[in-house]
Length: 142
Image (tube, rainbow, N blue to C red; front, side, top):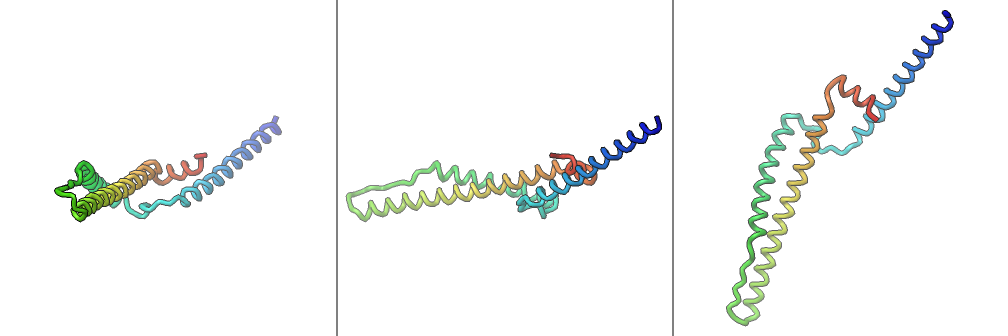
């Protein structure tokens, strides 16, 4: 009977050793995966990230409104005659307006992309946990 208790204890120790080894291996694997991610805002503190996020949201709203206003306007053409110079000036004015609208759209898209990246970083930080919670998440997440 005593021999049975010894083999049970040995099996339990072996199981605990395997669990600890697997957890350590998984921790290292998850840590390597986490550190290989490209995170342009990872060096910012939480307070700086929140401030930057707020400023970027304000800028995105402002640029989006400017883009919407410019997009809704039509370039005016004033064809007052059949002279090719007047028509050429009108064409150039319309082309210039189109370039300006596309430029505003590109700027609004860049701000929106930055905003999405900032929100993604904030979400990552919220789900990371602190201290022992982070260690357990890295060790036992597959």
